[in-house]
Length: 468
Image (cartoon, rainbow, N blue to C red; front, side):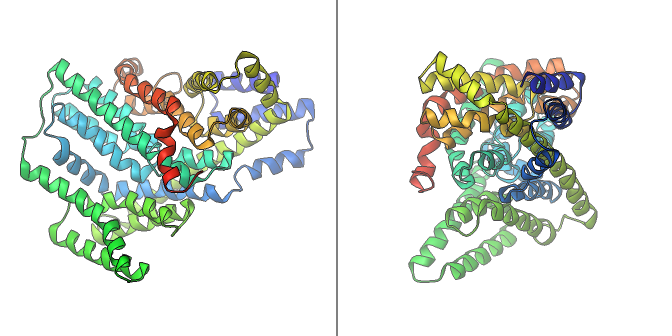
């Protein structure tokens, strides 16, 4: 086991990509110790990506890319400006609300940071905000991407822990709202201390227009419910409501109603049992294509091809990491790493709360060095037996792991969001790191609440009958 972990860490320190480091360390361990025939190792490599839930990965990535090329990102930003731009520190609040909406389409922190984050940082700089403030709030709000559904880390965790992905999606909603409120409070505090003003004039008409768009979106599921209550079939009710929605959108030219409908379609579809999370990913792609090709007509063959090739590139890297991490995790299991870790922890404590504190410390440390997907694939099979032994709900544990790893994306040495924002803002890594530090406070408060108040995570999926 020491050879496996030691060679992996050494290769990482040399600067090799995480997937190649894991694959090389695994190969070295197999050759030296002859733990299994070559054919078994090859089978484990293939088995790592031979999973139906993983089909959701390329489709969710494609949906986010298509939304970007369809010009939906700009509409989301304009809507957020109308809704909260009048507040103190207006564009910082816009940054957070925009990320909340965009998270319902992308599912990853990197997509948020590189997508709508680019627009948000430029706008804040143009309005006189220090570049450090723009980078800090963008980094913090990017962590919302994998917490609100759909979430790429939830898909990977659900596959590794054999947990309902739909339950994980629902479990992320309330924690996401808590994180959003904490970030907005943090912006208000910064605005008070630093004297930030509003960035758009207060206008009841503008706020009413933005609020009306939210109301229109909320009326969609309500309208379907009312029509079915009057005896219409579900399919006919959906068709009628969608036709009315499209007619209103064409007539009034809403800013973001169609974009706001994306999470409604995904969550509503899974809740009503119309499709699985994997099928929901396909529905998101179809909706993105409809917006880009039919409704807004901003998508061309060139942009469609670029989105497709970007998706292929991202998917290949994700699945390569999953495959390599699967072999690495299997070798850790064969070398009895789970049993050794279990024995070590049980000698320290028999309290599940102390165990969760130790897990938080471990995941925060791992998140500094290891890619999110790789960390989940490697550590979940090792930690899950202890999670069940301490009677911790796996859905709750999934939220804890994901948030820890999202925080890990924000700081050195391998925080990917840190490097993306450093490049976008043309700021040194050192200055970017210092800009992000104050924004870790609301994230750590959220982490403590989610860890020690399980009801925040489990209430919604329990009420919806997704977990017992």
